[in-house]
Length: 279
Image 1 (cartoon, one colour):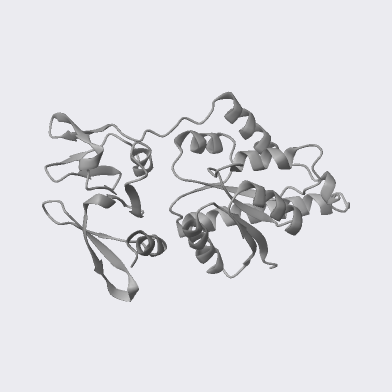
Image 2 (cartoon, helix red, strand yellow):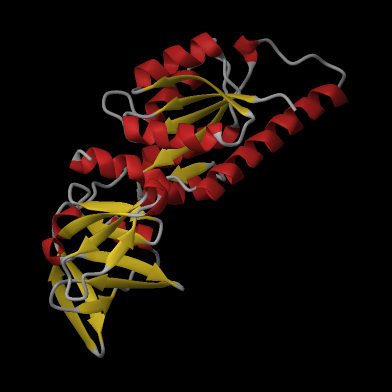
């Protein structure tokens, strides 16, 4: 099986490193280049003609959607690769992707989800090849390769309703016994999910969130202080009491709640931890 050629476009170096680590581990993805903004994305796609592009949605200047618009420009001679979007818990964008069956990855990246997206990309490329062979025609020249119509539909949907801004402050509703309490975000130590139940812990109390998923809760939290240290945990970096070295170069976080809860840091988030605290 020929390796898939790919580009990684993300304005965060740590995110690029995490994704490259996961893709390198598959053994059949050839990362041709990396870019940090939308302008680089267009140039790199024009230069390398990759099979697949991992494209960050939220980038300064030219975002991921603007990159697609440029590639869909009728004057463009850039062949349209397979696109897998990356997004940091933008609920509206995620719903838009789901509606149009467009592949996307949530940050922090999950190995199983990355593999699933790769499999889907392979299947689409295989179908395109089969279709060409069935009609006994050669693939059209790069200048006439058209985009997946789902990308057009996605862009039209996003044009109709602009992405809402993520709230930076505000209170979070917690249910404890039969009471609904309001907690300031800055007081939250961490949140966790287990068997579909979202628990939120502060120094004074522990309650449950009405959010259906941890991603939904993250949408309500200030990204400047809340960090997804593990797939099952979101922590307030101002409530980390101690970073505890663990086995095989991993770490745990000891929080300042009453139980001094220890929270694991996933392998893909270890780099971010070291960057955060200059370890």
